[in-house]
Length: 164
Image (tube, rainbow, N blue to C red; front, side, top):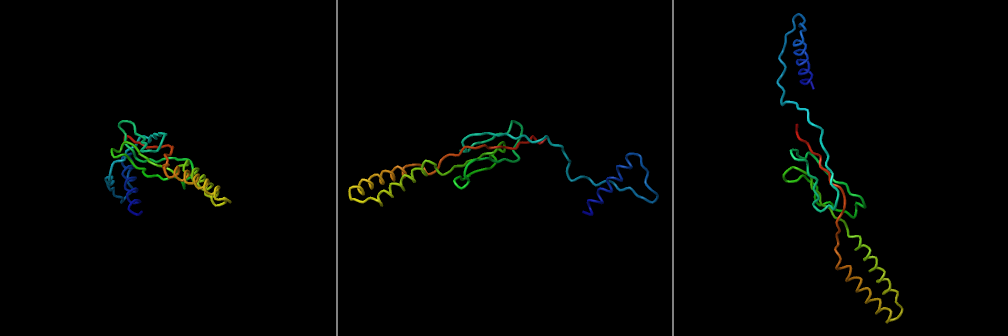
């Protein structure tokens, strides 16, 4: 903090001299320190948004710009969703996201399986139990053959800068 204050004082003193001010008696002028790096005014960043299925969905920056940040937006229940990738592209010209969720159709089928199991458990005769058991096995087969994960729809955004 002290070095910053001294630097600001020296820079202000030098600027006053450059504007024609005269130093007070006994004051000595110190040159302003060289800046560590040049300050540049950057163009405001541009946000590119792409919507669709989040299976390596990529928001690309316009030509001549590069990605400085990015992310995604997904609606729905977070507990059922998994984001497997959210990062800049290897070329640095966009942001890529992949995500999936529990297959909602599988969840419905598992409810059918449970209902069929209840029918087996509540059967009062051997014939009812046998019929219910066949229905249960068919419902289980269907559930077993269903994909466990499903694609997620959402939006991917890339925050892009030209650096100029």
